[in-house]
Image (cartoon, rainbow, N blue to C red):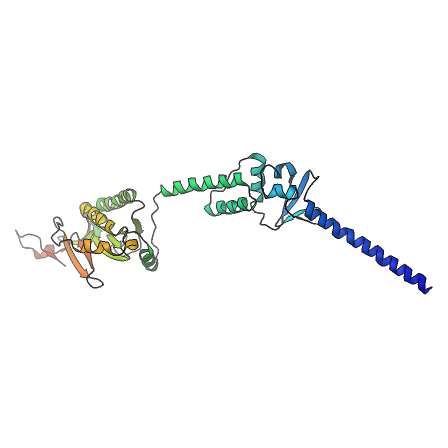
Length: 331
């Protein structure tokens, strides 16, 4: 009885071993033979399920073709799904490109870059070239567009000016920051300043960073920065004392603004080549023409470096001038 029991136990162990070995052998066959002899393929890409044909996957000399012909090992689960350890968000786009030879690409730069990464991973060269062409078109479009940053805080302004490698021109425009009425020409001059800002943006696009500030205290003021510091300032507003009331006056010193914009180009390459533009700017004489009614103040900043502050008009004391006398200008 004991011998028969031993023989029976040995036979049972042999049968169990025989059942387990073919399973491992079949898994190895799936892993090594790929999808040879199959017509349809079920793909599980990071949980995203796709059903396609071997013919579609084999259209280009890619990783997917290598999977189909057994050149690349794959894992097939118990339900026959080919498991690919990859994000499946854009895999449908890859399949559609293999089916049609062309596919609409995302407009967003980030999503387009993700599609590019997937195409490179699966080695679908046609889709890679398609993505590169789309990226180049986006680059051309972005380079031809003038984008003007809007400042939201003083901290953001300081960081932007300190890190920018280009000269910076800032227009501070806050018409609502006024407790007096405007003179008759002030609104037109304010619009002219804004129009000049837009024209300068178009003319010097790519060479100078133009920013707008609509939260500041000044009604209309131009500031010019180079090498992370303020070089010049043109204030276009003043308080006019009329016969019975004060008024705010906005000027439009077009020539002076354009001159300071050209001066700031000296600092165009100074961040990369050193402070070579400083000497040229500081050596300019103080006898430059300021135009009628203009004045120029210089305050020392950082040793010998100075900021040119140009006030188009000073405060006019109407009540202090006598009959037949000229207008008196006071700080």
